Length: 377
Image 1 (spheres, rainbow, N blue to C red):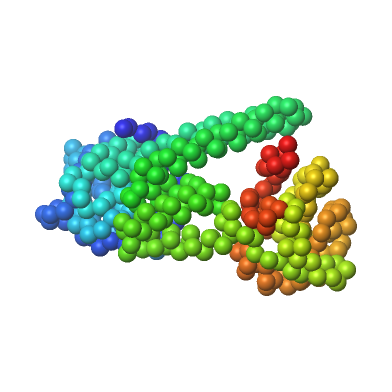
Image 2 (cartoon, rainbow, N blue to C red):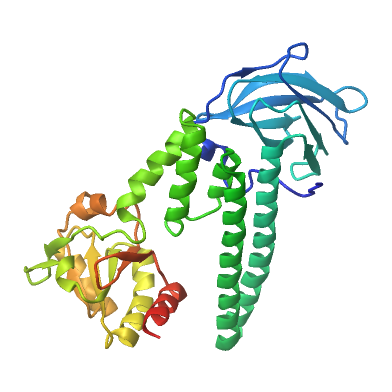
């Protein structure tokens, strides 16, 4: 498959592939996986460097010269599945998944353009990476077009078109995620599955992440990247969709203790915010609109503030007109809720069902409105 204008690491940095393991060394006269190919644009002193991607970044494994006809050849002794990349002249990079079982991998490239032509054959696992990139490139192209049209609709004050385009984007995102899920699952137990997971939201697709992690752990139990994935999945388990929301019990502005569990029987949006948080204050009008529309149903909002002073907290509540329940211990990031809910940034929110189960996270703007309409009709 020829893919032009593609840069395999355009979505996430090499550092995200932290913790990759696998010893390897290479030289042209050693046995191992043969890596051959050609470069279209020959440059003076051209070279190809094979690098293994580790926690600190790419680590050189072997370097060979590109001959006068644009050809190159190297061997890599690979003891376990790992992510690699081929560095062509410090100008173009191609990411590979190599297991050590490949006989010959051919990589043909432009060689002089960062987003130039590249073609890979002989590596079944690497083909998954390229298919995953193709899905995301198509999504990004469509998303850019929708975003431009959304801006035009906003400028024209065309609310109907704006909503239609927003719905189109949501449908596009859902379709893309379903395609990615299918491809990731096909790739299991290859490390390529991890590559695809980087394109997905672990909050929204926690159960899927858990399933993939379980299968990868069976096949590659000692692989560092697989162990890191398993650790991440386990850390998020207590706050996964479907899990019971951890208890929150803090003081109201009146000095009374209010617990999340006391609101059982209602749908509750637990909103983590603060007076000093500009994005939180910008989001408040959206929550107010949602609250006013659905407050006559069994919908409540519990504002959990990470403020430091009572004065700033109460002033923000009044200024923004927030007519729901409010609690805080005024301990800023040292609040106990930041640990129990793993809050590393605000605004953050959890939607809790009448049984106290988490059913959605970080719903903002139209997404909050859409979810509540889904629930209440």
